[in-house]
Length: 325
Image 1 (cartoon, rainbow, N blue to C red):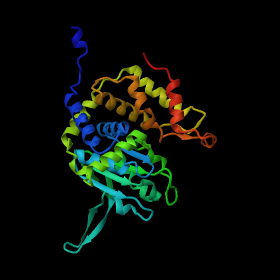
Image 2 (tube, rainbow, N blue to C red):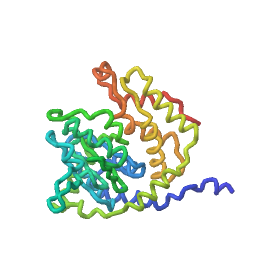
Image 3 (spheres, rainbow, N blue to C red):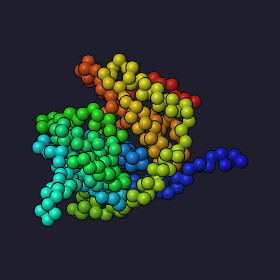
């Protein structure tokens, strides 16, 4: 009788096997960065978009490409530039000489996984073109609505160092990203492993050897399983308290939105699932708190001057809110 109490109420066997294979396939190319890989897997299971920030050369774009290779779906890449127009992203109507009618020519945003490289290089009107598709998975053009195929995910990258020719992302757009993932330099040992691996491959591109693990149907099944993950009422209240604290923190000019609390819940459920648990713990919430909240809150000017980061404030809030027993 006691054994049955520990049996999973949701069957996560196939999901965990797929997660293990994804880690292995991406691990053939990417050395280290385990947290980033886990957060990307969580974003797939939680049906969310991801913003990856890091200095040039830390494999931001490569990781997004690898993600598209382990999932058997369509993939498009858009390089954002200051002269990019909204029609270059979502598409435009073209006059067809044969039938003397205008026809909508879909832009590169029509795909399953869309990689937007250097997203902060395009002006506000081009950024605004992404609002609808990121939130509602559809595009409205010339009075017609075009639905995106399942699954639909935007993976965007940006460089935090170089600010010449860049534009600050609107808060409304940032709020549509499930995670903001920070990619740092590797340590000495990882750096050595990267160099050693590159030398041993003798110019061979390892990306070509990455095998497909997931397809659209499997993703749909796994997302349904994640939604069945059990969450205690006191844990939901714990999430609500964390979000509430961001709105009443003297160090913050802007707190997190209700969309952030839903994102925190869904990503905690997905993190529990990839750890073979059908219930959420406070540790799951703590793990995803920083990537979910760091881009949704805004520091007061004086705290920015002091060099405090949003991650510092998120940690303060998580440490302050009492963990449910």
